Image (tube, rainbow, N blue to C red; front, side):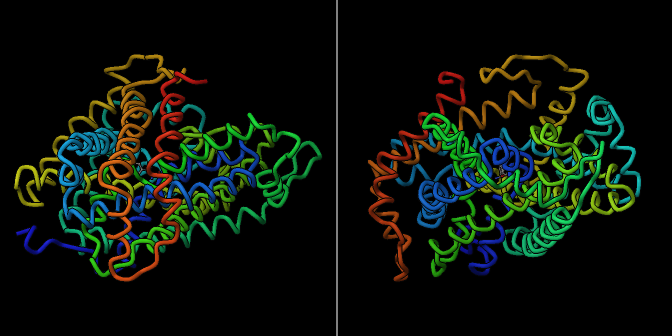
Length: 464
Ligand code: PHE
């Protein structure tokens, strides 16, 4: 029945907001600002935009077109294009399957902090050692992970149109409202310490203005690779998600315009996250404060900044964590949809059964991830040089290993076997314009596979 009457987004707006909901996630908030600050702000932003309009555009459009062309879940779609490449579908489904449980675990942490700020006990979570104490406890993180997972499952089980689209249409505008409000607030703060006053505007200067004495060719290549790695993670390609969402995109919808809109929203959210985070970090902690990324930025450093802001900090804290919650939730929903659509198609089961099955599986694996900080605690050294627990191992395998493999093989499949002209034909079938056809073919055949292979080697530690 799903197939005869395949559900779909009601129009381009619904599709764009859902896809932007997937794209705008924790990566925009805890990784982009840090990378931008590290790589000369303005320079990183400019490089990122150029890569987004070329490489990002090519990959995102290919995946959405593959979805719309095949009207299949990620598991089946690649095999329909070429039976030799059926295995990409397996990997493209394995990635969200691996990411989902630990994204839910982190979603549980975000839920905890949102609730703490909403109930007025934000100061408590800012205390030294709170975060460590929280994630090493055995019950609370699992319970909150379950809450976050169940909210996502509720959206999925309600369907593409009544669930995913409706949630995105409410949460995405709210997210942008909050991020703009906090960014404006951040521009207006100042703080004096040891006779030195730093303002939000000084922070903006530090965030955005490149130090051009730095820009040697090797420095520039570093900026380029950082921007490229961030871009692929951020626009949610190479994990089946955009194939699944593309399969629900109406045949009359405009793919190239939608891709530009999705990328614009993703970039805007990342840039504003930088304003919202880097400025207060600089104002309250100086330059040393700016070098944090990842969970400790969101769960340790930011709460301390909110406390330092005084009484208004508790309001900013509420806005911040509700915003992070929305960002994490819409991304989590997209990960779950990629898995559920594959389960439905492969086992020929209903949306309800597939959602229930995936919820149970994720509760078990996610529970193990949470217990990785206490009962199952161990430390491993990852090929990237970092040490980590179960969550970090799953993150490494999915992000550093499987995602580049899926991305590279998708390019080879399109560039050399299916032919870029087929994708172009799908995108332009309603007479719409394809902005960069020649560049697109070049990128899919040569540009993207080469650059992505370099990134793969770099991310598994084979290149420094
Ligand atoms: N694109 C999301 C971000 O920038 C991350 C994400 C990862 C989304 C995995 C979906 C799946 O945070």
